Image (cartoon, rainbow, N blue to C red; front, side):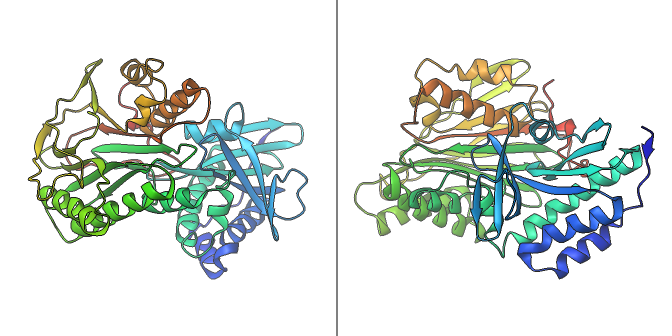
Length: 414
């Protein structure tokens, strides 16, 4: 079958049409416009769910393959393992399957490395190179549509929940950043959290300013709503202080004092606060009773020696200390909570795992680590398992590829 020549896609018109639609219909409108422009017989959007193991095809009632329904909405679960949709989500490259009836195209829906989902189309013929490139750009535009309209509807959040969340898990998810991955010119970071059967109070956070990258990872004592409340007080306090321009030490003191003021029953939270200066390529760190991170450099993994201060909420008025770490291009740093260690003592060699997954994008590396811990546990996790991976590319402020998926150049350890 010869190349299929499609009409040129006008992304501005696609976005304007989506903007004019109600939030719940925005992605559908873009899909209809794509179908009209390309003569597609099917267009669908699959969103990555919270489990990290599947995508969910969002549609309207009537689909035979739907595994969940809510009013007119339907959700069909598609496994990541062994499917073209899964390969596209993890590999971040457009994939085309051809047959006698035409072609099926899968394109990653991604924003700054955050793998949001997959755009899937059925075309009457084999697309040419220009059509494939246009579809990659359309999928990239769809990422903005999903992000913008997700503020106004629960549709996408509902689609991501193949397993119902408890109250504690709901609170925990609200404490996490809107994206779990961020690609910038100098660095790439990604985090993943696997909750225990009774949520264990883990959180992570990050924000990128003009010259600074702020990171945090915390682990509240206890389980379920009790730990979620502790995490809420600390994370809210840390964010409030950070947004007010507080230093790292001031943030630590403020967060610890908030636990005394609003909880005051001996509860505590361990944590790491990190501020990376993108100009000097150095990090300032506060360690409040948290497990030590690992660094992979030059093909070797070592524990980063940090002085450890008491957990937040344990010593009134404690003077938290900062420590400075220097980055080198090619460094990969892994931060994690004790749930990575506790659920399978001796079963998961984290250092060996870090080396074995060096070729993976940080997004895939942290998910694979948490997945390995879950398998090694042989059942429900006893504690939340959380990991954050930071790849340092260095070289000062620099651009990155932004069309059609995550930047392949960020896999800097191949």
